Length: 261
Image 1 (cartoon, rainbow, N blue to C red):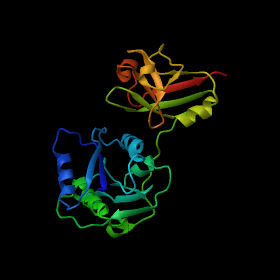
Image 2: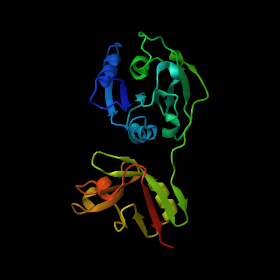
Image 3: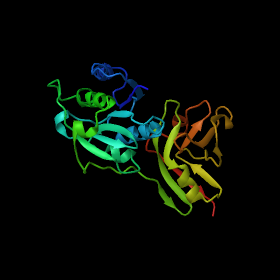
Image 4: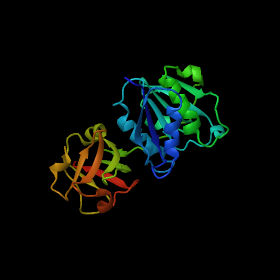
């Protein structure tokens, strides 16, 4: 099986930058697969990038290399790191991204130390991350391409506020269908809810939801529903509609689950 290199960036598809990254990878004489995870991350939004990559990372095979080109800065503006984590690799700037995605400590962290074949320092995703990924794909270990370190920047992901009878969370991601995904996971819902009846409420009053569906078609076309998605996060949707627009569930909006006494 060919090694896999994935790309998660905020570059979009309208410019040529993404093509430059892929061209750089393929010019490194490596036989690999390049898979796009997303290039529609909100500009510089590390939390969104972490949510997206974390949602799919466990589905990739051992040895997959993930390039994260979000808020990378310039080559000489900070450190650029390789994390060995859960038998995969993450290449990213030292900007706190890894702490947003990780549930465990990394196996190893190295600061990238490879010679660039360009004087351009403004595009590390192409000029530093792509060659590093190609080396890892050829079986080079992180210690060969970097200096092992112990410290790296950390950020805290916004967590839900909980009480005995409620969970107050927020919308962290809105997909292209307008489905609004929260930071409330299934385990927290069960832990706080303890099997009690509940209401899921949000900015648009009068549209509370009191049942968890298992699929979109559980609701009639045009009706709202709540379900735990494939990543285990609570999602509010409208069957064949746009929940984000119709229910006011934009990113960072509050979602509250109240449980009966």
